Length: 487
Image (cartoon, rainbow, N blue to C red; front, side):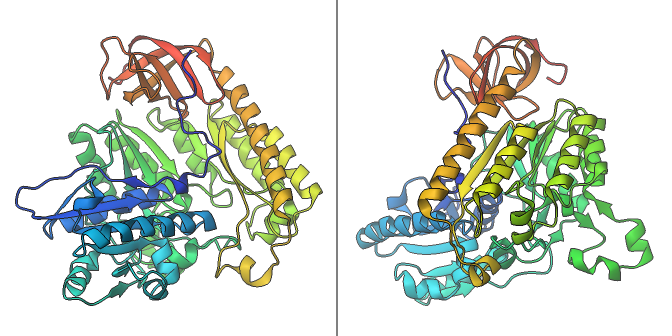
């Protein structure tokens, strides 16, 4: 029996540091080691950083000990993520004692949040770079090469990296990330993202299409359009989304929203799978769902964070949607795309959360029956409104117990959803060998569920029709019955 293939959905993925794979240019003489934590956007940003530094004489390495420059791309979404980074810096410090010429830089959201303070707290750190300042890396590296600490955490009002072709270092050659927006205007009281990544701004759709087309020409079969809030994508010629009302009538008439962008990408490469992440319930509109239904190559999967099932807690979180409005959105998705998979983010133990609020969350989960989810106990983040105005008053033991109940219910619903696939023939894109068996391939169906099946004569990157015979709570197990029409 093949066991669950996917990473357990209840694990905090921001704790998983990933060094990027090798990228080599014979002309480059310096070595870069870069490690990423947190959301998909961070992993995408690390590829942009590697691309910028490749032009500055750096090849990447997976050996920390031989690196001339060590960069850690950080996450601030939870306290545990920051603690993990600080522990990694201890490891870097031990290596630096052996290799004193090695320089260490901190990138990303943690760098933006702590700024120059990081240099004081972590003596090992030579450079602090916020998520909008990577184009300044050549200047910052010159600073640290000359023996000075370097900091740039200035947030931009424009999409910063639309003209940078990322180096696909951590890719399987089949799937890739394409960033379409940066920042977030939704000021959820628990979240640091608006402070670490700035206001919402979108990327020129033409540059997005060019990147997608280039990926297809290089053999990639699937892209994920990335943003802190993809539903807020809005291109009207540049600038912040909040300034759209100041745009000219011509700019408004020719503007591109997320639904239109989805259609443009789907039509540009009809045999390429299109995914997107992350959505926000208050910003997802019917035209996005209708666009998904219209095109077979847009995957039938939506990550739709809700955070709580209690109206009172949603209001405290400043989520700007109610439980009832969320249900209406779910009903519309089920009606327009009956086979659409839906996943969630859930926070338990938010300040003032009562047992009644917790039961509202469980009942919401019973209504939706998510395919999978990412669930966490609340951790207070410095600088957020919740940290400034609310007491973190739910006892840790209560948080842990409620989180366990949410996880248990999600595992039950996950198994319910995977059983719905039994007996069906589904298209699977092969991503690589199974983690559990060398004799099996691993891929995903349109609903983003992991599928495992015997290798036979198929190859990585093939679209294969697979009959689903067995399942666990997170993995489908089957047998190939031939190539799909998209192969």
